[in-house]
Length: 472
Image (cartoon, rainbow, N blue to C red; front, side, top):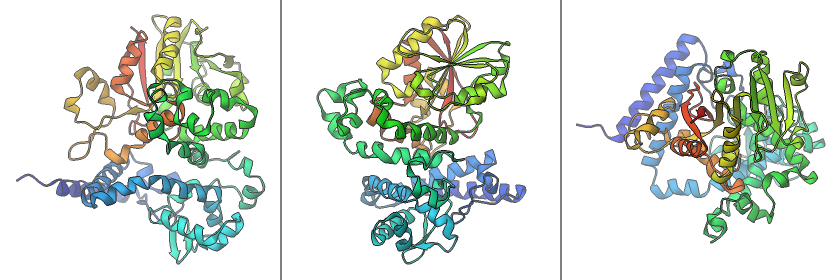
């Protein structure tokens, strides 16, 4: 007799929990503790051990699928319906510096009135907001209306003194060692607000079918009629540009550090080989490559206004150079061993992405490799329904066994959130998109590139996975 889905999911959780406990015992590294706000990487086994990370992902996928299976259907759907309210509650706590205030308060926590007093907001309302979050395990209510940090809320800690946060709010995220709080703040601001108008944009007879960036939901919500990147360059947006520069770093830090270094066998390139970081911003990827592979010559291309903040280390040896270039115009470097595109293609709809990729193909030699680092959206359908040529390329992407969804379901759904609603604002704000492997294959082929392989990065869950292409 076949086991029910309920039993299969329960068994998966039991088996994976046993794996976690075994690894914890063998390594002497603790299991996660939701109430512990200590986020030191070495403090939890599932943040340091590959097998533990995989077991934890199965537990999360099965647990969330169990919730979908066992909760009353309307209750489960309403959790999604009210998702925007949860994000709005979290933004209140981010802007009120609640995490940092509670950090100073210690494990006994602080009454909501005391937290609110520092931010000049209503304590009763803040208590309701924080209880909403605590019910979703962000913060914990230790006594009526009294809250403390936990494992999740601690991720929002800028580690700055509370007095400094209130005296200099414009620089809240500047100079922080962990850029994740900036990524959260960036996403919770204008981008979440714009998401509420997605339906109105899709129903518009012109904007709904447009690939133009100025026809995004974000543009309609704010009444802006210039492309996002042009608006972003304007002097009044300097504060947002600073936040974005930090936020993108925090976003990158959510991926394994090896994502860039393992994207290509850089050591195999000859001394003096040219790597062009197209749209490389302030040179963060270039710095990493230059430090690890001093035999390479790296050219960072971007619009000059992107370099308000630079890494001085990359210019000391002349190994890394900055070159002003608009990637919608012909590529000036014709001797590149590698064209490197990190977090670029997903910012643009297909017609614009084709312009970028076609210009690179026109400048490529027969030995040039194109390396693209973007989120590859995993299919939720069974593997056997995917065309064989696409399925072969998908082998580097982790696939879960039944009864879990092949893409690990809600435990691995962040990419779909990125694609439609949030950071870095694909559909809602840029009218662009994350893509699945089949779409990427077609896009590259239409520009004269052949998708050669998707590179497996351990611990990434397919979250920003590199791919390599060569001239067709």
